[in-house]
Structure formats: C-alpha cells, structure tokens
Image (cartoon, rainbow, N blue to C red):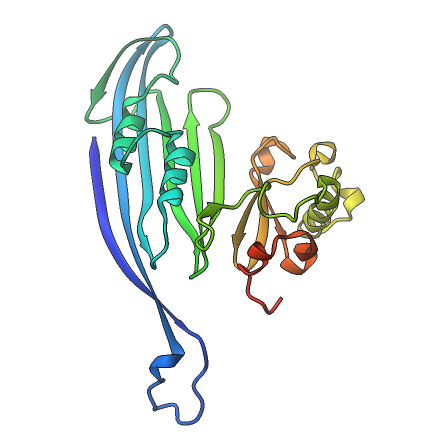
Length: 276
C-alpha cells in the first residue's frame, strides 16, 4: 500500500472591484479580499490476490481525497465528517488516515473468497476487479464549498458500477445542503419537479413531453435529485438507472436560480451571485 499526502496552502484572492484610471496604478488594499485555504491531497492504493470459489482474481483498490484543513475561519467539522461518511461510509473514524486504512482493509464486497493476500504488482494477463473512491472540490468561494465524490467498482459483469455524490457545504450555517433544508417550509415536491423537468428538457433540446423519447424514464422523475451548487447554478443529481438507462450515465439537471428562487430558503439564495 502507498499512502501519500500533500499539504496545500492556497490564498484565494478575489478582486471585488475593477480599478479605474491609470492601469499602472496598484489597486488599493480595500479592493482585495483574502480567503485562506489549507487542504491535503491524500492518495492510497493496495492490490490483492484473491482465491475464490470460481478461481483466482486480483483486486486493485485506490482512493484519493482533497481533505480540508482550513477554509477561512469557518467551522468545517461537519464538512469533514460528511466527507468520511459519503466517501467511505465511515461514521466512527477520528481521522481521514484511519478512514482510508479501513477502506483499503475491507474486501468483504468480494463474494466467494477462500483466501486473500496483498501483492505488490498485478499480472498483466489477470482477471482484475477494482474499487476506487475519489473526492475533490468542484466549486469554492467565501460562502460555500462543493465537493464531488465518485465511487466506482468492477466485480465482473458487463460494466463497472459508478455512483457520484456531490454536495454543497454552507459555511455560515455549518451544514450540508439537501432537499430537507434548501426549500422554504411547506414547499411540495409537486412544485419542484416540474421546474426540474423543464430544465432537463432544455438540456436535451426537447419538450417536456418529449423526455421519454429522449431516453428519460419520465415516470420515475418524481422527486428532486441530490442538490448542489456549482457555477452559480443549482443542480439536481441523479445516478444511472434513477431516471434513465445506464448508458445515459449520471444526470445533473442545471436549474438557474431565477427559475427556482421562489421556493428556496433565503439562506440558500444568498449563496448565489445576486446578478441572476
């Protein structure tokens, strides 16, 4: 197993106002805001030879995560706990390193195992299974950070199984956004789904009535997907098979803030640029 980490300290500089007059003049300090960031990039991998009921296979495991140490002066304990949970289904580890080691140790998802031993290399002509988990920052500003976690595995069959778990963390409220806290109280699902269908139809270049012919399981699109914010847009994420065939892949429906603002909590609206 290799376990590596890199400490990254990044000052995020945003120019809040354009300088007027002579271009050679240095901007005033009041025009610059600074948001200090510290992250570690941790990567690890391990390979196994697995004796099973159906023969010998090899298993390759890999993980990589951009682990947050500091985002400004914000409390990020809930963010860190959420990363452990969403990436590794881990609610007990006290550190990211512990969670990674547990992930690499756990081979229980391989069925019919008679014996399993770590190996340094994988034979080029072997039947190889794999399991991987990655976590990276998708969007970041002074108000929120959005992560994307991707879990993929192949244990035989026609294709790998992949799930994507994006989520947005609101610094001010120290919470992960989800469908229980982004909408105004009392907003019915029946009000949200039509907005999502209209947005999806726009993405696919069809009418709402044409979603089925475009390959969407329209009858299954009855609920909002996982919400997250990126690029000043609210997305609703659906994994393969949720609202379309595997060949369609993950579906991320882009809903512009003005289309859904009337249903959103004020604390969520403030996370978007106010120019929409």
